[in-house]
Amino acid sequence: MKRFLTILVSMSILFSLLLVTGCSSKRKGVIKPTKHTSAARHKATMRSYNVLGKRYHPTFVEVGQVMRGVSSWYGPNFHGKHTSNGEIYNMHARTAAHKTWPMDTMVRVKNLENGKSTVVRINDRGPFVRGRIIDCSYRAGKEIGLDRAGIAKVKIQVVGFAGKVQSRATIAKRKSEHTQTRVKLSNFGVQVGAFNRYEGAQIYKRQYANLHSRYKPIIKKFSGIYGEPLYRVWLMGFGSEQEARDFKNRNDLMGAFIVR
Image 1 (spheres, rainbow, N blue to C red):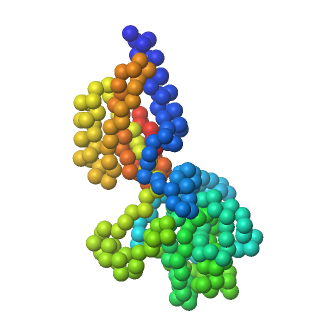
Image 2: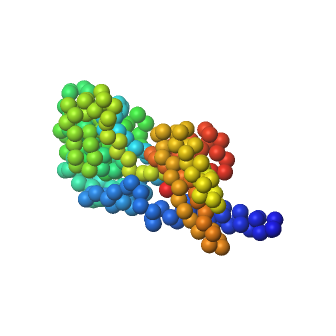
């Protein structure tokens, strides 16, 4: 009996690892393709990545979210090459690169030195220079005066997604009412429990629903190695793999693992 339980646990762990790496393409998530970026590209560009020894963790954004820093622009040397979301870079279009915000996020870029602003769509990753928060296309950069100085202090604000831009009045109203739209292109989760009985999974689901209103507990049914049901409790709604991992570590969930 003890040997059987050991084999069963080992197979369960192996299945769990395969689930994390192999089921993301089969399971429908909240990622939706747009006319610019496929679902597969969205998933790829929302994974953490390393450039020049520094790791970046793409995550969700909310309409109205603001960031301040330095903007630069890029043009002829990249014109005609592929961007991170698979498009061909067109320096005459209003696009930009950001290190962590999702592809197709619509962003208003305001040059704080001359007051000029424009709206761009994120379709690339970068700039990987300290202090710089966004890299505008040649056209967008020219519209706010970057073509002269090369760089400038800017304020960037999320104003929509995939071509849909909200007005300043709408953004201000929703921020005051705390009803702003969250642009979420990734739905990571943490498996917090696994049960042979559905009743046990339900109890765990209720516990996590009461403890963490920000994340949604769900029950997923799988078949064990001998066909018996296995009910896994997943806590979903994390905006990035790092957010899910931080939650797991903060709550000492030693047996938990990341799912998607």
